[in-house]
Image (cartoon, rainbow, N blue to C red; front, side, top):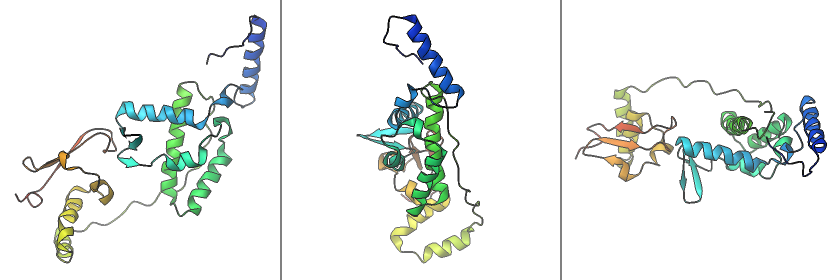
Length: 219
C-alpha cells in the first residue's frame, strides 16, 4: 500500500512507516486503513461478481445470482462504517439483530459469508490487513424424503388447473418457485424443449440448459 508522507524529508516517511509497522505488530489496523469504509470493500466485491458473471446490473440495481437486494441487509447495518471497526463483536451484534427480525440462522450465514468475501478480496488488494473471525450459525439439516411420481400425480390432480404446469416444472427440474418466477419468455424455446438460463441466474456462474418434458411442451 502506497501512502504519501506529505513531506520532502525522508526521515518523516520512515517515521510514518515505522509507526504503521508498530500498529500492525499490535494487531491494529494502520491509520491509513482506518479510512477504508464498508462501501470501499463492497465496491471490490461488486466488481468481482460482475467480472465473473455471478452478478448482472438491472438499471441501477445489482442482481447477485438472480436475486435482488442481496446486499441490502449488509448495506443497512454496515453502511458508512469504518472497516477497522468491524470486529467479531460487531458481527455478533449484526447477527443478533437479523435474528430478532425473524431471519433464520442459515440465511444470516449467507449475509456473513458475503461480508467475509468482501474482506478477503480487500485483503488480497492490500486494502485491509486483518480479517476478523466470523461467527456462523449451525446450518439446517439436509432435507430427506422424495415424492415418487405416482404420489406426485395424485397431488397434482388435486391442485387448481393453473398451478399444475408450474408444479410439474418444479418437480421435474428441481427448481424452486422463487427461481422459476425469474424465468423470462425469451429464454424459453418450446421448439427445442429447453430453457436457457444466463450466468447471472445460475449459482455456479455458468449458463445452464434446462430440458422440458413433453408434458410441459404439448404444442
